[in-house]
Length: 234
Image (cartoon, rainbow, N blue to C red):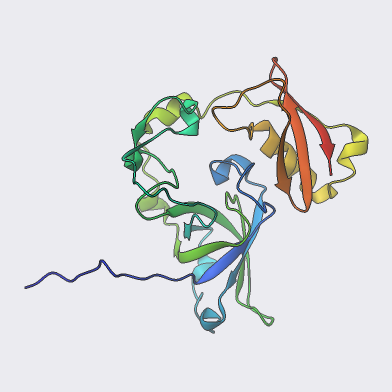
C-alpha cells in the first residue's frame, strides 16, 4: 500500500490566547515558573459549538499546541541552536531544544484550567493560568493533560538540570512606580522579574532593559549582586 503524502498538510488556528505580554520579551521560558500569569482562550467562530468542550471540566490542566507567531524563520535551516538556558554560548541539536527556530514552528505548553465560560457571544471561553505565551498567539490544538501518562516521574531532564534551580533575583520597585501597575497584576510582574527576563547572553550591569507588560513598558537594570531595579514604568 502506498503511504499517504502528508507534505501538504495544512493546519489553521482553532483559537487565539490573550495574555498580558504584547511582545515575546519578558515571557517566562516555562509557564509553571510563574503560575499566577493568566490567559484567555477565545475560539474562532467556526469552533464555537455547543458541546465542543464537554467533559473538559473534569480535567485540571490542558496541553496547548501553538505557533511561534512572532518568529521569522531563517532562509537556511540550522540543525543546531544556542539555548538561552546555556547562556547562548553552547550549541545543541534543534530537537534537543524548544527553540522557535525549527522545521515547523510549533510550541507546546501545559496550563491550568481556571474556568470554562459557556455563555456569551464568544463562548465557549477557557480561562487558564501558568501561561508562557504572547498575546494573540494562535492555538492549533487543545488536549487534556492526563497525569498518569503525561507525568513521567523518572524522566531525565538533560541540560536543564543545571539551570532550573538558579537563584531568583531580588526585585526592587519604588512605591511611586508600583502605582502604575494594577494591584492584581503586580505580584505576577514581580515573579516575572525575579526569573531574570534578560536574554541568556546579555548580562550587562550598565544596560537598561525594557519589555512590554499589559499596556506599559517596564524599564529595569540588574546590579552585580543580582538585584533587579525597576527604573521606570511608562
